Length: 225
Ligand code: DX5
Ligand code: ZN
Image (spheres, rainbow, N blue to C red):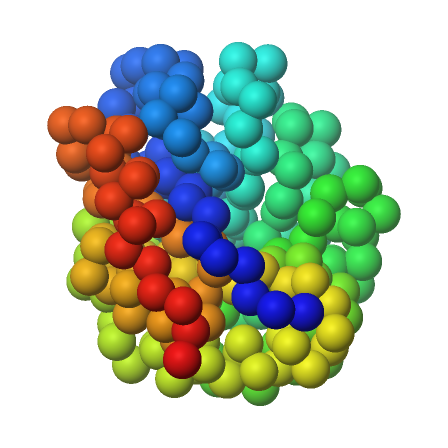
């Protein structure tokens, strides 16, 4: 399955103004966002806390965007149903979050949600080889998860290339997203390496003009070489 071009852009609400969350979501929807990225953190799997299913549930009726939920929590299994009921369209779990990722991904699919698998920078591409048949999205962390505004790790570009080859070998349509430090420069590098989904916190919500920011990221994408 060939790579999609141009890539999808998924603004991360982690960098939005939390006191005006519904407006901030509507603003990126008007500005041309493809997906809305929602970062859930538990203060245990990652050293930060963000929000849980209640916020997602409150936003759901306000937005037509695809809700792309990134769970940075462990354990993850007891909470899958809550996030599905809250209105997640995609649920990403980390391969590092528990020993039974295979079962977790099957459970997400059974809940009618698209499963995604996320990998931290220290985790090799091969670690997810045995679950590729179960996922619709691979989320390559290009920072250590936990915080917005960090610097993109160019060391992850080779991993994106490897994962693109692995995804294509399945013959299935698997999106490869990059998450962390994505801006117009790094979007070019990531897409050239084989990413076709860009998560962007600071480089959308930290900008004065969201429409320009989203179009700028999409426009910076390069076809993979
Ligand atoms: C980091 C989160 C990211 C974060 C990205 O743990 O998974 O989605 O919001 O923020 P930026 O784009 O600012 O690096
Ligand atoms: Zn994320």
